[in-house]
Length: 413
Image 1: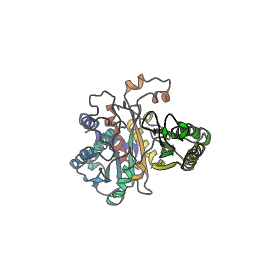
Image 2: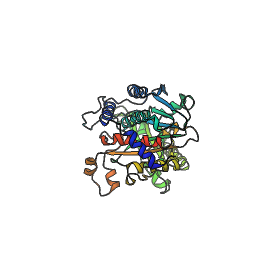
Image 3: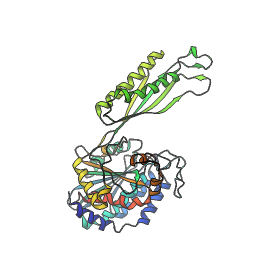
Image 4: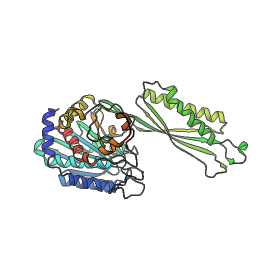
């Protein structure tokens, strides 16, 4: 670990050459042209071209559309920097001059910022090779939103084809007044599982419900009963979110369908709690179907998505100290574990420490206009990630590059 004050000073010198207008142009272009998971061909090509121009050895197509750039600069540690590239199936409603030009697709989670920060940091560090020694690996990851991108890159040889890291580093745009850099040592994000449920009934005419076993009614009871799992089966000390995100049944007003389908999402921070909640879901679904007299057992399919993200506490403390030196002590605080989830940790080979922090990005006028008497209330009333109104303040472009540069310099010789 390099001394925080020295790292902050080096970061300021190295990033003094950044051109905010160029970063903004790069970002606006990405925002106008969002691409869904595993379709990030244009975004990947743009990042790859940037890395090649800066002198990196670039490999494209890792795990589908993933990009890996390697810059060997003498002896020293190997640092991996990661940014995710995919957008979301959201219709943009920001009214921005540079709003998405793709119908129904939007960078509603800030991944366009992530790629811009990653490209800016890669260029700045490449231009300042005399200021550090070691190997820098820059990773443009596809498909974080679908949950398969990190695993696909690993399956595509990320851990075997490129220099093994000493650390893996990443960051995420977040709601909150622009200018803060939350760090959480240890558990910082939750595990996520998707659960698909199929309820089998007996379909028939809407005028003769007595001749059917209505799966819609049974599924509705399941939805209602599931609301008691967190409130009555999980200790208050544990954080759990169980969401029914989709309820699909039927094709016409007067037809009772033969089946109903539910899509659930579970967020947990403890493996034992996760197992208990999954058991409760299976028990409730099976019980309601038996009570209704369904002709066959329901189908419950659990699709593990993201693991817990657990920062290395020592590494996080060291990088947080650098960010305090760089931006001011008041800008860095412990946000605490979030219920959001990420596949970032899957990129780290076994035993390799990693750190993942946040960059708040809500424009000051939006923050001030948000109702709320305290920080928590305001936080809940500004457009957050996945909102069609999510519009980060462009003032975070340069600081977001500096956070990555300084984190890398804290490890590089």
